[in-house]
Length: 108
Image 1 (cartoon, rainbow, N blue to C red):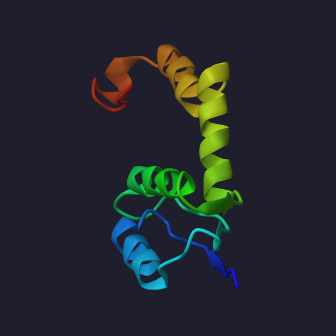
Image 2 (cartoon, rainbow, N blue to C red):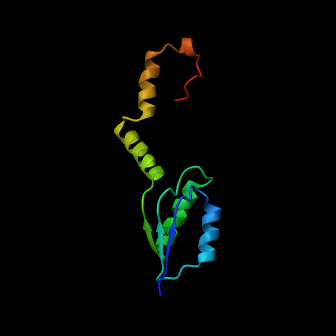
Image 3 (tube, rainbow, N blue to C red):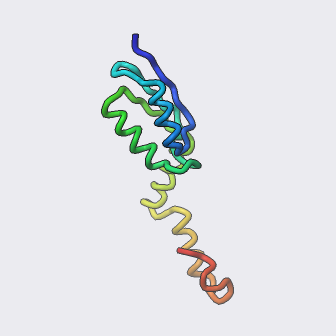
């Protein structure tokens, strides 16, 4: 009988996630459901995403976005739209005399 494994709050901890999946040893008919927060806080968020994508090519993987993924997607959208925090800071910095704040105060 196929099993369903529900995993959440990985937060970029690739080593722990790989160890968990190795211990679970899911089969081809089992289902892995990741319930959010694959990224942020841990040492290797991009490694976690790459690993989950790789598993999705071999196993039945489902993903539910968590608040950390939603925050990242909002940030990406702001950068694409030119309405993000970086652009706001650039506009503000153009209005402030660099001599008042010092040349290296804002790293843009």
